[in-house]
Length: 97
View 1 (cartoon, one colour):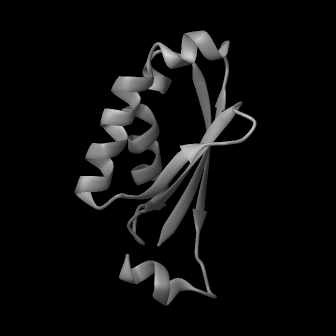
View 2 (tube, one colour; view 1 turned 45 degrees about the vertical axis):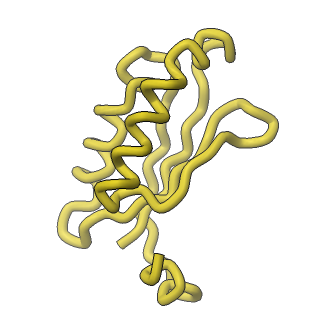
């Protein structure tokens, strides 16, 4: 199963970017672990979006763990909308990534 995490900044961009390097290091680790497919800021920059792989059995628990360990969340500079997603069209292409 896949999921989308929509991240919305709760603080001014200057406060958010103060935590950017630890946040991006965390995302690189999620990518290395096979959890993160892609991530990046929205334009205009009021937040970001993650495309994630999560287990079929415990998708919400997996998503909670991703959120709860993110330096942005830990610093209180962002809020998360976590959406399990079962793609139908294009799933085979995602599975190849």
